[in-house]
Length: 392
Ligand code: SF4
Image (cartoon, rainbow, N blue to C red; front, side, top):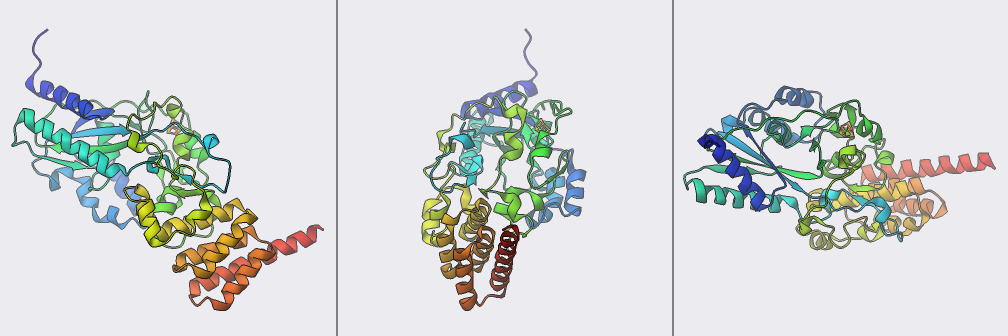
């Protein structure tokens, strides 16, 4: 066998080093405008990014990655498996349980991935010279990471908009290392979604408005994490018991049926983060929230966002045992966002105790938005009672 050309040899070595550092998948692409840049710009124009203003701010950089890192010649795309093979059926049966997206069960991936990418850069510099420039991104920079992952052959972009590997599925965190070294690029792999549309049909909010097109404003991940204010009322019943993110479009994907478990124990569920008991979450103080979710991606929702989601989930579960905790939140929580969603949840559960709590709150509440929620919830209970008496 002849010797490999230098460029190819370096590429192979970089990929070997990435695997040695612990990444499950790796591929290389050139620094070019991302192939779906135009679709991304159109997606933003159609308002599908919702309130994620940072996407608009970084638009130009996303479309021209060579512009903000002029020295960069190659992009190493890596993927790290976070799959902990637990399912809804495995959840504890006691209490009222909510669902947290799998990616947030363990430690926050940003730090773990960034550290690993820095380790990779250090290994590359040790072998190829300290003058090698590099810059790591994990979800944070203006990089269309799925575009570069697919360009590098890590997987294809599925109709559910995640990167899917044909044998390993899609439970992966993605990251990129921009390098000043000119490396041989990998080839993209072909789209294997074919005639399947399971993810589109399974999405309870209809967020996949077509193959490969996600309207974030309807996506449960967006509604429970990125959206900072009140959750649109028409969306609340569709969110179900999700309190942070959603896995439905990946759970139904046939390519995840044989996904291997992650060997990174830090991504396995922390105490209380897998299908957590909802009622204790509703009384978390700011300090308790910070302590409980230290080093977890859940901090992104902040206390007010998480408790808003917990109230919505309890409203959707419609169980009378949640009424005392929701009433307490409605009367005492310092945040009007939480009080307003607790009122909505009481309206969904209904019954005399919920109505009594709403009436007590109505006598003391001063914030107009919360007063409006209380009024609508009382109307809802009134409607339920008339329907019940009509049936008798
Ligand atoms: S569920 Fe089907 S259509 Fe959706 S991403 Fe998976 S293979 Fe593609």
